[in-house]
Length: 514
Image (cartoon, rainbow, N blue to C red; front, side, top):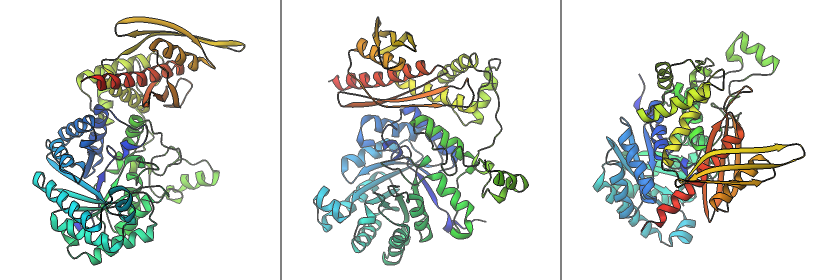
């Protein structure tokens, strides 16, 4: 029987801090998709967003709160009434809601950002917690930049907010400055010096600027922290956050050291990693711990021989432990709706009837081009359909394109677009076929766009693999991401660019509405 005192609460902030990573913004449908996967993974709490940041963030938090159950849905808020009211309204549909208020406490933030004295900070923190408590009994408080806050003042703040009603107090290493032994000492100091510390759960939120987010979080657990704020694949601001999969599997694999456990269904880890990677466009490096393609790969002859004889010689966990089974269900053009629906269910993918029809149609189209359809192909199709849902009423639609390219030939592209019901055709030359297509699109739309980033990857192996293209397009101070997949790389590149252009145009239209 597990000792509840040693349970580590997993507070997933992929939808909030994770989405703040450049290029990782998600549509509402994508956020719901990820939230449902997180529920299947077994996280205890989801931080769904920052409702006061924008109407889109507010809507997405409210939709996520309506789409999951049996876990906590939190909304982030500054210690100001307007933010707190927005967060309370957004999480209202959740069976278990939480308002997470924060306020900077370090000397550098007090002096340069807030221009407040210590006593003013304490008053603001207490007021924020009490205000949140009027709307929700579950209130969490974070002293931003806690790891650079003077220990005596940090203790004073923590004690004050617990007295004010905070059920969880999160200690953030906001800029990834802490060293493991030092961060552990901060948690140990609070556990020893704050007289009411046992009335709240102590949480940590570590950033990875020095590559120490997981190590700092583990040291915090060793010193008494019982909640960790983390993200799938470690995505987030700057260098990211504590990676959920690394933290969870370390606690599981080294239970002898930490004597702590989580409620995570570890066999869902790889699926969750792939979904977040596909939705955000943030590729997982091959040698990434736990979820990288090479995490359970062995090439050296000595390693191969050892694993064949006894897997534990070179593997401290099995692929099955994290859901990295090698077996695949092969689907093809003769597969019917029932088989396809069952495979989606096995992958933990839930779609509306309309979304399913779109995904199935794209699957059949791909099956005509490929001999075998793999899980990664299906996940890529689902991701694209969900993303396309945001641009259901597109401004620019691709009708046709033609390219001419080869050795000794100037690459030329002719593109036909539907813009608000009118067909428009133009041609352009470029350094290559993709550059030519992009120039032709810019000519038709009369937009001066800059391609800030272009990434291409094979979704699966094989010569007939689908290629996934992700682009970041900038114009007039706006920057938007577009992504598309196809067995034809030029087509994927074209559709990804048009998706980004549509997002820019839609935001311009929304901002122009009085």
